[in-house]
Image (cartoon, rainbow, N blue to C red; front, side, top):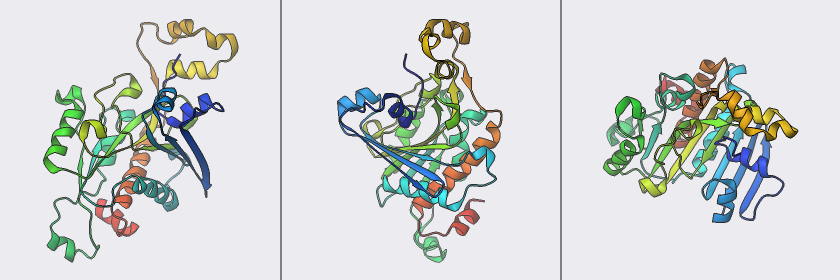
Length: 296
């Protein structure tokens, strides 16, 4: 059985220590933040990892639901990892995926509401703002297919064709196979994303191949598939009886997703961390205080 997870770090942990050739891994600690880097370099490794060739960075921080606010150092780490995977110059389009009305899926829209959009700022305004040069940024939350009748990939591709960004940043809620990773794990990747794949509702992918520009994806797990969770908690022969587990957990064949009781708080704080980190990565010359002022 393929356990449901969007996190490269969990796939790596599942197959370790027998990592295939073509998978590079490093991990280190910076204060109370753990940074894990996985690089997939060939197609054979990509097949084993079930992930495209590219870079996957996992930043593990204290749980958003148990801390009143994230430290500047945490957000600086995330901002630096984002910056490492982006082109140095040019317009960046930031896209927040998800349904604002469904809390575990609202991370993208809530993050977008706090992104500093600057594409409309003229040179004259830029010069007189005392913030230094502001990189052009556009931001959109396109909703979901059930709300608009239009695929997110179609909306994003049409905008990319019109405004011609140097890169696209995609934000989405993810699925984990472990409750311990909910609300404290940030995944950053340069391989794009398949919207809805975490909840078995996979749509057309957003990637360099489909959009024609570099695509950076950011996500935080907010749900765990119930069957995956039961299998992770069981051991031995019980774990091997997958069909019986599925009959009990999915009595009508309907997938069930589990999310924490404090999901509202988790998503609110996670959106603040992601938005600030993206803003800092795109506007490194603007002070933290000014970024907060400009997006309040």
